[in-house]
Image 1 (tube, rainbow over the protein chains, first blue to last red):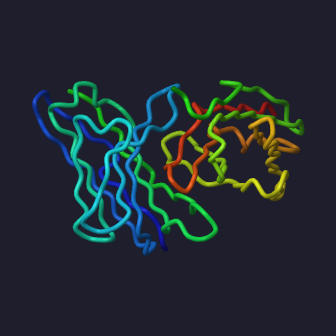
Image 2 (spheres, rainbow over the protein chains, first blue to last red):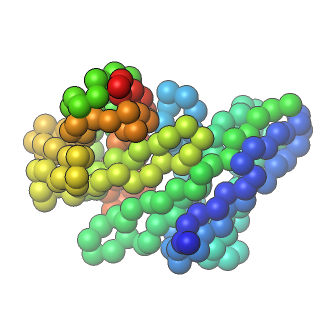
Length: 116
Length: 111
């Protein structure tokens, strides 16, 4: 089955610790995205990547880092600089924008990060 | 500043009724308007999407109505069922921008 796999489903972080969330897709999509979801605030874009070895900051990139070494993978690191990391993190992917416009984003089932 | 404003925040509908969720935007460059459905503990799933060259799009019990002049679009769920109980998000984007999401509507359909 084609899709997006996020792991782990639940993650706990200690103070001062960096943690990495995994996102893998087998949809052959060029673009990948990371969102943060908080109650009552919808989804906010953290980072996105349109192509391998390139990525851009979204609206709330501070305290986060990413890499895009492979087309299928887009891991997100929540650093100790992120002071309020407790949230539901969602990864998405899509085909590149074409002559018809933006393409649908498909989401994984998320990772819930909590502070110990 | 919220690029896409969504209302209501929550909605309770009787089984068989019509659920209506509204969204408004300001950026006239937006040209893609998807709706997502999210169940607890799951990621959002694309439900239906519309581009501004049409005023309405229907897929089964789900219909998007789009009013370009008013910069508004809405989701109608006909014959609402308890299985439709979920959180619904509208979103908008342009070729230059990524998706901007509304704040979500929690729909509860009462049997």
